[in-house]
Image 1 (cartoon, helix red, strand yellow):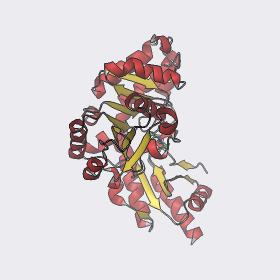
Image 2 (cartoon, rainbow, N blue to C red; image 1 turned 60 degrees about the vertical axis):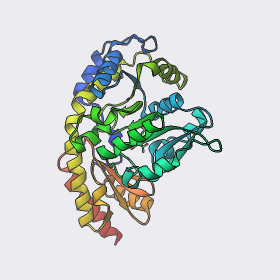
Image 3 (cartoon, helix red, strand yellow; image 1 turned 45 degrees about the horizontal axis):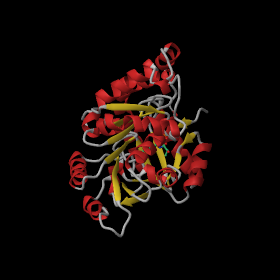
Image 4 (cartoon, rainbow, N blue to C red; image 1 turned 180 degrees about the vertical axis):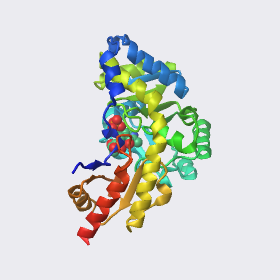
Length: 339
Ligand code: TLP
């Protein structure tokens, strides 16, 4: 029995078209800025996402950390929505690399509580100075939830009122845009920097983009190199990235429909799902013993992940139409065995 893999949208394999483009990619040394395919990807990304420049990096983690290095100094702090990836899942990198504090602020269902955020900004002489406000859209740990446009506007206005830069962790920005029915540029606009992943729902094998103003580009390239991200003939990867960026967004609606069907099915099976939080391609369920539950599912041919003390299912482009109904049948069988 082939397992149905719902652990993450990072697991997708490059499509035949991506593999062809990778094999045929024109390349050069990207550390010299001479890889034509990387340059094409960066130019296209900057244009479609509404920034002056884009930088192609190996991972979202590296892109987020380069952004923090650009914005923060030692002993300063970044305010993030609670559960933010760069606080929970980046291995304490801000402490190690930027020497900065990360302070989570209440954000029910991933939407920052703006009053709490405003009160959390440190300006006085007795506290770590706030140097950056960050947002995550979609918000992974909150369930792949989307930040409403008006909250984002108010968030940006708050940052502006305090002359603070902003960073958007948009690992799944295109999912948020698909949910809201707006262009991704609409959701990235106004941030000082933004990270967008090509290797998640968009389907590239590797790579994320850091969108930024021209004035920060040279410094960002320097930090990328310092962190080991000077990656020479990266055009072989950018070639797949170009297809992900242009073709990938078209498939996200299907991913979201599959997640909704899965959530409703799990709910019908009596599992604890927050249906309102199921907005994009993720479904989280609350169970007594997540690890034991996962092992049980695996024995029945369904792979899911333990994330934030819950069980997470993520839909993605490599799933076949019949996979969600089949996964539900297998999960039902697993539950009957457990009962
Ligand atoms: N998230 C991964 C795991 O690390 C949890 C996943 O499977 O969802 N920002 C957000 C919001 C993310 O969800 C992730 C990856 C990243 C940044 C980091 O991207 P990578 O994995 O490319 O370093």
